[in-house]
Image (cartoon, rainbow, N blue to C red):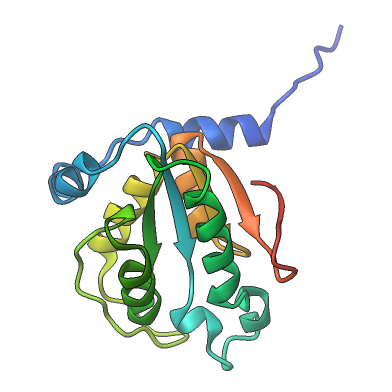
Length: 174
């Protein structure tokens, strides 16, 4: 008698992420920003930087213009005065523009932005882990297409995630 072995890769993948615990350093750095969250905090991850560099053969997959995120942010914030957005991005310009436009309804982690070049070692990895952890603590997340960063945060926190698409809408959940 042969027993059929069933292995659900995606379930195991999700379980592994959900078993992660942030290091003491990551948690301590995230603690203040996390205290600004409420039950209605939505995560937004906008990937720019080296991902959109023309040297990257996949740059067009990350090519969602920030204005499409801006449109979603306006829609999300219009649903309730209690809603806040945690913004994780590698773009100084996106962070400052959206923070200026929406004021204290945009929450950001106070980090040192570092330039990243395609196919080069990247600085700021502790800050990236802090933002990954913070995204995992949001109620819902809107993500950049082709982003494993967004996917990891989504799986870690079991967060319902929509991917912002080139057509100014969003595709299926991650």
